[in-house]
Length: 160
Image (cartoon, rainbow, N blue to C red; front, side, top):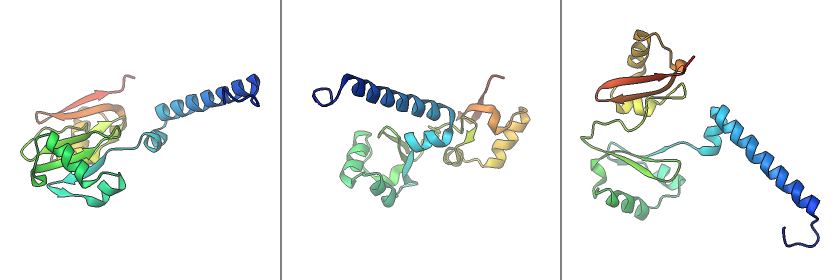
């Protein structure tokens, strides 16, 4: 477009302004609406659960068997049966939790929303979480971030 003689400077500036406006609107929406953020950014995908490979999820995300095994080998894992969870992150990285690793690598609550997969990994249910929150006079929507570390729930509420 820059090198085309049929495009005037005004047309070029208008296209540039429209593109800038589109980027700014999408940025605003992803920061203020979790549904738009999920649509634009995506969400982590579970590839391996308790040693079982979820082939359909891997294929849906364009992960070949060779690529998956390469990523596991780089983490020192040669047998899928020893993988408790393998999650494909939005940026393409693979987060792996091995059998026997008790550390929960994901937050339990993010932006006032419960992460049910992380809650299940911590060996707790939603009733336990709600009891913990009520004991500290919070609701799920009051919490910016909650992590489960060393068998302790750490809460970081929004500042009101």
